[in-house]
Structures are given as structure tokens and as C-alpha cells.
Image (tube, rainbow, N blue to C red; front, side, top):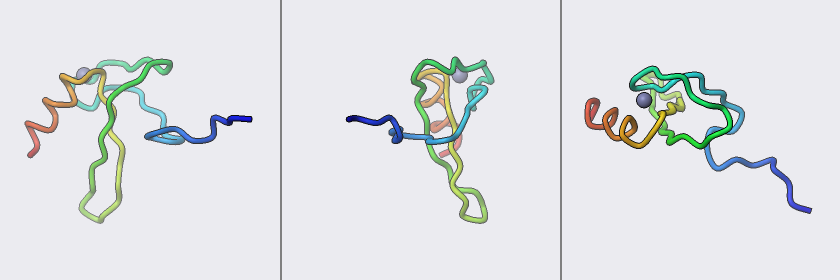
Length: 62
Ligand SMILES: [Zn+2]
């Protein structure tokens, strides 16, 4: 029997708003996510409302 224990990304992490534009995210829909490494090496997840914000965030920070 298949289970739904494993999510592809962001397991157990709830996202409230887009990390780029701040728009509220819908819980039931897929959003692009990325991981970032903090200064102390801790990995954090960021979620975005769509691919445009995902790409814009990377372009601005890299
Ligand atoms: Zn956004």
C-alpha cells in the first residue's frame, strides 16, 4: 500500500508567504522551493509563489 510519508521537498515545513515578493502562498498547491545555507551552515527552505519569483530571487542574490 502506498504511503504519503515522503514529500519531494520541504517535508514538515510550512510556508506562509513567498520569500521574494511576500505574497501569501496557498497550502494546497505546489510552489518552487530552494534551500539556502545560513552563516552557521544551517540549511533553510525558501518557498516562492511561482517560477518568476524563484528565478528573480536567485538572480538578485548570486
Ligand atoms: Zn512571489
